[in-house]
Image (cartoon, rainbow over all chains, first blue to last red; front, side):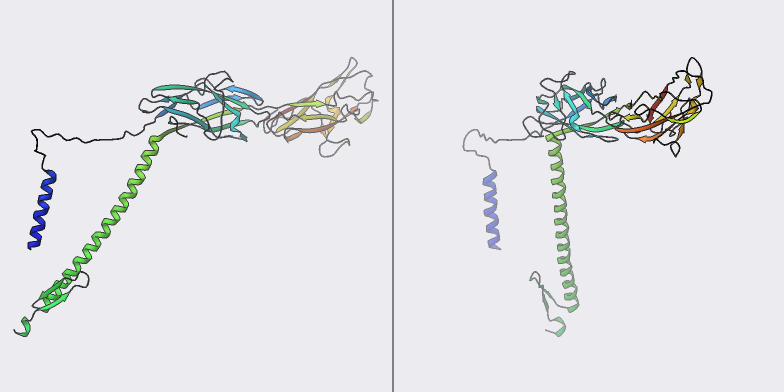
Length: 171
Length: 221
């Protein structure tokens, strides 16, 4: 019992030393750091979609999508986004009576085929179409399709993906 | 000390605690209570560990999802098109010609490569299966007329047989009543042409027009 009392007293003294303010001087000042991290928020939305070409003849190239259905398709980097982003695009083959390969499709930043930003659609994300895009920004994409000769008549569809990642990070 | 008041002892094998009692009955009760407390403690421990594990798993999953959602944003849309029907046929080994024929003769086969055969090609640019229909007009000349039904066509150069057909001034109503049915693109079809010249037919040069129409399989001509 005596041992217990001794230990209790020593413990109380130690605690009181830890929490007693330093009263050696007239004033006391202490400092500490405080930190937090703000998480990354990336938010994009699509408008003027779905992309559609209507009826096309086989053996025609660079068919521009219908007005406001891929001419353009608009990507908005919403204002809630809190980093600059890179935007990547990919797509699937079109399926229908047969398959239309994804590389029959191109997208661009204007409605004229060719030029610097003329990009062939691929099944994987490769090079960003837009880089270092700040929040609250609108980006237009224009969609073109080649229809192979003798492609069987009918309806075809696919899915096209738009991915925004933090600038400089892989998609 | 009397026999009944001699203290009785029991030492717990789990924790080493010693329980002393004056009466056996009381000792048994205290022993049972002590062992029950061990069981309860173990049960509570198992419960705590289970909850801890579940909580950790939930936290790990939630935080992973939140991180993934924040690092990127991916949207998708469908895109669609309709490919129009293309039907393209060409004729070769035409015009069809019989040369000079005598009245009162039947099943005169057209001249070589001028209806013997007359060839229909469904071109490779065609993008549907097609049914091919044939019709014609009467032959006329300044001296007379020969009815369209004096003419027959076939898929071989021998009169008669399964594909032997009489020329008509209109296409069959269809659908699926073509002379050739369900023909794929890039296909060649030969037709052989025969004509009867009625007896007493006035001499002269007779001409008509023969039509070949390809429609999408299953549709009307």
